[in-house]
Image (cartoon, rainbow, N blue to C red; front, side, top):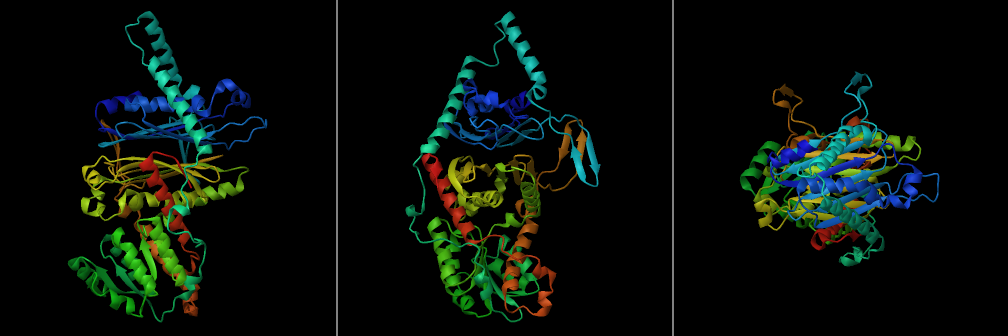
Length: 586
């Protein structure tokens, strides 16, 4: 930890912009300890080290404090009521944000980790293990647990701290590393955290459907009937709107599918759409020309909308009105009202409107979720308690022309993180708190933010933090961590290569790959699954197609209408929270 502080002060990562602190206890304290009034609140007793660490690493006092907590542990004494899982979000005057997650228990040892992101790089501190032995066999690769508890983890720190204290008694000129002000400020912050937690219980700061124009029923759950309405002959005709990077990625999957045919490409950029037409052997139009011809062509059954976000709503509404099924890149629209409006049009016309949340079909996330829910079903009283989603991208991904048409950080990027948290936790979000800041000049210019942390509380008590950043010098960072009653599950970054170099300057490994490469298989797979849901529910499938394993393997679409609607509602709540500085209840 001292080494991290020294590296910050030496400018190795530039200005501190985001801190993430993890503290999880092992073993949990006794019921007698928790029941004693002198223990104080969870934040006073447990989180005080983390808030002190946040101050230590930033050199600032927080200007905003949010905290939420839940109780998952089961106690023999019914009178023992104590929170055991918590999240805190602190924002400092410089704009730096700190997200803290705490738990009273793990099964794998004492877990204390630190991440500090600056505008020039990332510093990470992982846990020391009980031993460095690694076992590799047919069951996989296993290493030892973390050190058992805090006396083992901080054995040297306790000794050094005592020696430092004695040295100050001998010579007061040495100077204390922990001052009276440090103790007071840590107490002030934890007391504020407890007040934040208590205030949420009584909070009337709500966001609900009455705040929007759309007040009718929005039950778009699991309705497969639109997928049964597709009629086609030999192949399913497709028109692709937006023939840039994402349009080409989706079109490659369409081109490879045996039962789809790209008939049209439509884009505002004539050289690009002309080249697209050559590559995919189709007709093309320069938008908005040719719209009527495309939508009036009875061969066109599906419209793929891969344009900039601001054009999604007008294109989708026209496509649905023309009785075309629609596949659209997120977001469907740039507000809850417009999102809701599009689904009502689709519902009234019995047409599919699919919003692409490609992370739901990512092989790594699906493997983690499968293992997670297998354990949830087989281990007694096993529950998800906390989820952490990390999404960071390099500055080069966000040029000014893109930002002006993206719909803002929340709808352009955070909507994915909101969706994947809901997909994992399988519960409704009931509370949202969010803080953000703009560091990049171009992003400030368009009135947006590039650093954000969102705290979500779910109906089942699960807590979740999302941190997203648009200036990660080390590459495209995509991670998920799920903490449960028994285990913690992690999906870490893929890397551009698995080469490791050991030299006199340390150990070097490759950075994560660029975003499109990270999810290249997921983009492709999502198109196949979308098409195959139609084919499984279509009356046009002949016996040969029924025996096609590529068609039979997936029965349901990765997401439904209500997913996009709920994601949009949560995004609106997060936007409102940033603007007001308040906790928003849904």
